[in-house]
Image (cartoon, rainbow, N blue to C red):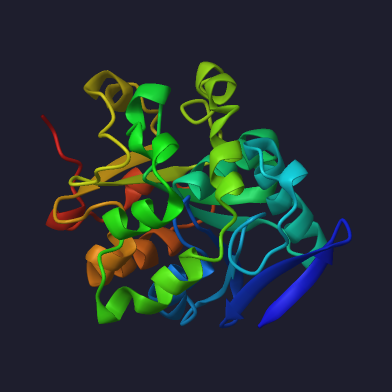
Length: 262
């Protein structure tokens, strides 16, 4: 286990590989651990980091740091503390919001973004996220199986207050429309069967800038990186291999990457 002290508190992270840096940020249910297959794939060509956000996994449980603003600040603190320059960020759920917020404020520090299970409004969040106990959410989104046992165990380490507090200030984020105005190229990935984050409305997708690309994983729920791991890892490799500043729409798109049109 690796750790760094930031603002006098422990932040846990893991790292694999060598090369340009890419950082994986987990969501409301889980920790760094569910990124292991993606990290292993990315580490062939990149230096892949995954960290536990405040209140999750083995990172410090400090209530004052649980709001979304502080989770985004953690990204900045981690990059500075590790001496990492321009970086690719891959965020899921809460991690997608934190990555988008950081990139909106520090675009010169982010080369590209992959945003997975990104909510776009209060209405795009299943109310169960706010109402259910953490163990119920884990059972709902991560069914019991050998492949998810370690991920489920790690999810149980979270402080339930970290999940709930991170949801409190979301409306200002949505009102600011942070993610559509991002200057950083980004890939937006959504599991078509995600019960937690509802599919974005057609008008939102139609308004995406040329620097953005939306892809739906038809056979995935809330965790495309686990549900369709091989497909996700191929997409991640293609995305990370793009030249700096290139839009993901510049990919030589395989049929499976084509944007779904309704």
